[in-house]
Amino acid sequence: MPQNTFSFVNRRFFLSRFAALGILFTLLLSGCAGKESAPESRFVLLDGSSTTTRDLQGKVMLVNFWATTCVTCVKEMPDLVDTYNKFQAKGFDTIAVAMAYDRPDWVLHFAQTRQLPFKVALDNTGEVATAWGDVKLTPTTYLVDRQGRIVKRYIGEPDFAALHELIEKLLADT
Image (cartoon, rainbow, N blue to C red; front, side, top):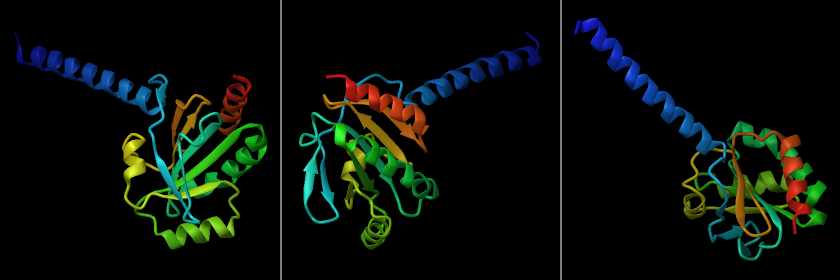
Protein backbone atom coordinates (compact mmCIF):
# COMPACT_ATOMS: atom_id res chain seq x y z
CA MET A 1 0.00 0.00 0.00
CA PRO A 2 1.50 3.37 -0.95
CA GLN A 3 2.46 5.66 1.94
CA ASN A 4 -0.05 8.36 0.87
CA THR A 5 -2.97 5.93 0.89
CA PHE A 6 -2.13 4.64 4.36
CA SER A 7 -1.79 8.19 5.72
CA PHE A 8 -5.07 9.19 4.13
CA VAL A 9 -6.89 6.19 5.66
CA ASN A 10 -5.40 6.78 9.12
CA ARG A 11 -6.19 10.49 9.00
CA ARG A 12 -9.75 9.80 7.89
CA PHE A 13 -10.23 7.22 10.67
CA PHE A 14 -8.98 9.56 13.39
CA LEU A 15 -10.95 12.53 12.05
CA SER A 16 -14.16 10.50 12.04
CA ARG A 17 -13.54 9.42 15.65
CA PHE A 18 -12.73 12.99 16.64
CA ALA A 19 -15.94 14.25 14.99
CA ALA A 20 -17.99 11.60 16.81
CA LEU A 21 -16.49 12.64 20.15
CA GLY A 22 -17.25 16.28 19.34
CA ILE A 23 -20.89 15.48 18.64
CA LEU A 24 -21.19 13.48 21.88
CA PHE A 25 -19.56 16.30 23.86
CA THR A 26 -21.95 18.85 22.32
CA LEU A 27 -24.98 16.70 23.19
CA LEU A 28 -23.82 16.34 26.77
CA LEU A 29 -23.21 20.07 27.14
CA SER A 30 -26.58 20.95 25.68
CA GLY A 31 -28.38 18.89 28.29
CA CYS A 32 -29.64 16.13 26.01
CA ALA A 33 -28.49 13.43 28.39
CA GLY A 34 -31.95 12.63 29.82
CA LYS A 35 -33.56 13.43 33.14
CA GLU A 36 -31.37 12.77 36.12
CA SER A 37 -32.16 13.67 39.71
CA ALA A 38 -30.78 16.95 40.96
CA PRO A 39 -28.09 16.29 43.55
CA GLU A 40 -28.91 16.72 47.21
CA SER A 41 -27.30 20.07 47.95
CA ARG A 42 -27.23 22.52 50.81
CA PHE A 43 -27.10 26.13 49.65
CA VAL A 44 -25.68 28.66 52.12
CA LEU A 45 -27.42 31.94 51.39
CA LEU A 46 -26.01 35.45 51.75
CA ASP A 47 -27.94 36.08 54.95
CA GLY A 48 -26.34 33.00 56.57
CA SER A 49 -29.44 30.82 56.32
CA SER A 50 -29.51 27.75 54.15
CA THR A 51 -31.88 25.78 51.97
CA THR A 52 -31.61 22.43 50.26
CA THR A 53 -32.80 20.91 47.03
CA ARG A 54 -35.17 18.81 49.13
CA ASP A 55 -36.71 22.01 50.59
CA LEU A 56 -37.47 23.19 47.07
CA GLN A 57 -39.05 19.99 45.76
CA GLY A 58 -42.52 20.63 44.44
CA LYS A 59 -41.33 23.80 42.71
CA VAL A 60 -39.78 24.29 39.32
CA MET A 61 -36.28 25.51 40.12
CA LEU A 62 -33.51 27.29 38.25
CA VAL A 63 -30.01 26.80 39.67
CA ASN A 64 -27.58 29.27 38.13
CA PHE A 65 -23.81 28.99 38.70
CA TRP A 66 -22.25 32.40 38.13
CA ALA A 67 -19.48 34.80 39.12
CA THR A 68 -19.28 38.55 39.50
CA THR A 69 -16.25 38.53 37.19
CA CYS A 70 -18.10 36.67 34.41
CA VAL A 71 -19.25 39.11 31.72
CA THR A 72 -21.98 36.81 30.40
CA CYS A 73 -23.22 36.16 33.95
CA VAL A 74 -23.56 39.87 34.64
CA LYS A 75 -25.25 40.39 31.26
CA GLU A 76 -27.84 37.65 31.81
CA MET A 77 -28.69 38.62 35.40
CA PRO A 78 -31.49 41.09 34.47
CA ASP A 79 -33.10 38.32 32.38
CA LEU A 80 -32.86 35.94 35.35
CA VAL A 81 -34.56 38.59 37.50
CA ASP A 82 -37.32 39.02 34.89
CA THR A 83 -37.76 35.25 34.67
CA TYR A 84 -38.03 34.93 38.44
CA ASN A 85 -40.49 37.82 38.69
CA LYS A 86 -42.64 36.40 35.88
CA PHE A 87 -42.98 32.88 37.33
CA GLN A 88 -42.27 32.95 41.09
CA ALA A 89 -45.95 33.30 42.08
CA LYS A 90 -46.72 30.12 40.11
CA GLY A 91 -44.32 27.81 41.98
CA PHE A 92 -40.97 28.76 40.44
CA ASP A 93 -37.78 29.53 42.36
CA THR A 94 -34.25 30.56 41.50
CA ILE A 95 -30.95 30.08 43.29
CA ALA A 96 -27.90 31.92 41.99
CA VAL A 97 -24.82 30.07 43.23
CA ALA A 98 -21.65 32.16 43.30
CA MET A 99 -18.56 30.14 42.44
CA ALA A 100 -15.96 29.34 45.10
CA TYR A 101 -13.41 31.73 43.58
CA ASP A 102 -15.82 34.68 43.78
CA ARG A 103 -15.19 36.98 46.72
CA PRO A 104 -18.17 36.96 49.13
CA ASP A 105 -18.04 40.75 49.55
CA TRP A 106 -18.30 41.19 45.76
CA VAL A 107 -21.24 38.78 45.62
CA LEU A 108 -23.01 40.60 48.45
CA HIS A 109 -22.39 43.99 46.82
CA PHE A 110 -23.64 42.71 43.45
CA ALA A 111 -26.81 41.21 44.95
CA GLN A 112 -27.57 44.35 46.97
CA THR A 113 -26.91 46.91 44.25
CA ARG A 114 -28.99 44.98 41.71
CA GLN A 115 -31.66 44.09 44.26
CA LEU A 116 -31.69 40.46 43.26
CA PRO A 117 -35.10 39.12 44.33
CA PHE A 118 -34.13 35.44 44.43
CA LYS A 119 -31.88 33.37 46.65
CA VAL A 120 -28.14 33.97 46.25
CA ALA A 121 -25.81 31.32 47.64
CA LEU A 122 -22.07 31.23 48.28
CA ASP A 123 -20.25 28.04 47.31
CA ASN A 124 -17.11 28.80 49.35
CA THR A 125 -15.80 25.25 49.22
CA GLY A 126 -16.80 24.38 45.65
CA GLU A 127 -18.79 21.45 47.00
CA VAL A 128 -22.06 22.52 45.38
CA ALA A 129 -20.48 23.05 41.95
CA THR A 130 -18.83 19.64 42.22
CA ALA A 131 -22.11 17.95 43.14
CA TRP A 132 -23.87 19.52 40.14
CA GLY A 133 -21.50 17.95 37.60
CA ASP A 134 -18.19 19.58 38.52
CA VAL A 135 -19.28 22.96 37.14
CA LYS A 136 -16.29 24.99 35.99
CA LEU A 137 -17.77 27.21 33.26
CA THR A 138 -19.99 30.15 34.05
CA PRO A 139 -22.75 30.70 33.58
CA THR A 140 -24.04 27.17 33.88
CA THR A 141 -27.74 26.90 34.61
CA TYR A 142 -29.92 23.92 35.45
CA LEU A 143 -33.69 23.77 35.16
CA VAL A 144 -35.21 21.30 37.62
CA ASP A 145 -38.81 20.04 37.52
CA ARG A 146 -41.21 19.67 40.46
CA GLN A 147 -40.03 16.09 41.03
CA GLY A 148 -36.43 17.21 41.48
CA ARG A 149 -35.18 16.02 38.07
CA ILE A 150 -32.83 18.04 35.90
CA VAL A 151 -34.72 18.83 32.72
CA LYS A 152 -32.17 21.03 30.96
CA ARG A 153 -28.64 22.29 31.41
CA TYR A 154 -27.46 25.48 29.78
CA ILE A 155 -23.82 26.41 29.43
CA GLY A 156 -23.67 30.07 28.56
CA GLU A 157 -26.64 32.37 28.32
CA PRO A 158 -29.89 30.54 27.57
CA ASP A 159 -32.40 31.55 24.94
CA PHE A 160 -34.79 33.15 27.42
CA ALA A 161 -37.88 32.90 25.18
CA ALA A 162 -37.35 29.14 24.87
CA LEU A 163 -36.54 28.89 28.59
CA HIS A 164 -39.81 30.66 29.44
CA GLU A 165 -41.76 28.23 27.24
CA LEU A 166 -40.15 25.29 29.01
CA ILE A 167 -40.82 26.79 32.46
CA GLU A 168 -44.48 27.33 31.53
CA LYS A 169 -44.74 23.70 30.40
CA LEU A 170 -43.12 22.43 33.62
CA LEU A 171 -45.35 24.61 35.79
CA ALA A 172 -48.42 23.27 33.97
CA ASP A 173 -47.34 19.66 34.67
CA THR A 174 -48.61 18.39 38.00
